[in-house]
Length: 470
Image (cartoon, rainbow, N blue to C red):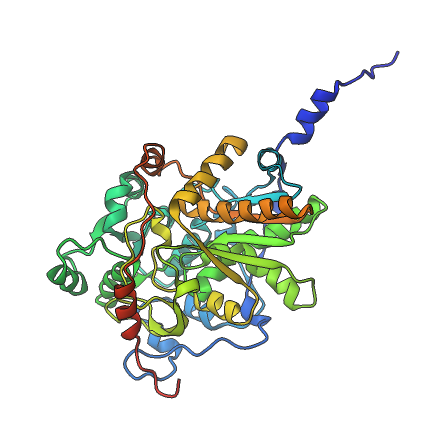
């Protein structure tokens, strides 16, 4: 007896249009992070002490970070082992899935093949726990009791609050005021995990009070919130500072994304021609792109790697590559990065996680070396792309991730115009379930493109520190 039967052509069409999911097993969870510094053809510029303008040493960073993270920050070792306790926590959501976006491809009518690495499966809905967990672990090992930090959209703050709860650390979060007001549910999530959340600029620090004295209605910025968090950490021996992006050790921890994606693309029998990620400080972008760039730098094929930023805060596309402070009050070391000036306060657009005046030094360095292509988009066109993606794929992207979705759509439509196929890999860094007010504003026509003030940018860039010999 034969059990074979004919399947109608329309059923085949549905099957071929279905989103495909590539899932690794727990045994495939990376055992080490990847450090791009080991493969760079030109070493990173030196980090400078804010007082002496001389190269900093590990002891200069000790008031802010435990020595284990400082060692990772300056390391040029290619692989750095992930501690077993961190891997145990990672297993709650890692390896994260990779999807082939067949329905979105069909909606766009493109011959391109689009894959997205989805980090919204983490406990807080974004890629941020990939570094929050190890940072909390290393601080706990060092005997730290309290952590202070900043957050824009709240993704980082909620992730550090989650990690702090796991390892028994008190967490204080300075949340950029415009996001504090726009995104209350992220704030409530941080409270749920036990964190203390303060709108920044605040009256709790000297740097916050100085800002409020000049501008009582200041919307805040990540640079200002960093100043407040660093000031708190520097005042107590049992308190350290934790940063959610920008620094080398943060980007290092995020490379679990790209290391997994390399294996998943092999499962799919494919290899990306184009890699896309949104960039505020650069961590999710680096997490996906750096392991692929490492393959390229070690003799593999060249790929187009696109860093996407908001037009209202365009550090890579409008900023200067220069030494600058990481915060507004000039408490942090000077790093060479693409910057809009440490005093620049971006307008209050909805992608709060992308409102930082500078870019990760390692991302900036890779742009200088021609390894990365930066682009920028306005927020309305990014939300439009995100809505189209959601209707095809069933996943609502965070406002930040919408920037990557927009750039991937542009690349896919270019393939359509040119009549050729490319494989596009996108970092879908988080979901937008806590960002529904932004989507409501978009559908109501209240979401507008906001331009930065050119005069304010010029003033901020004119105030870049003078570094001898540079």
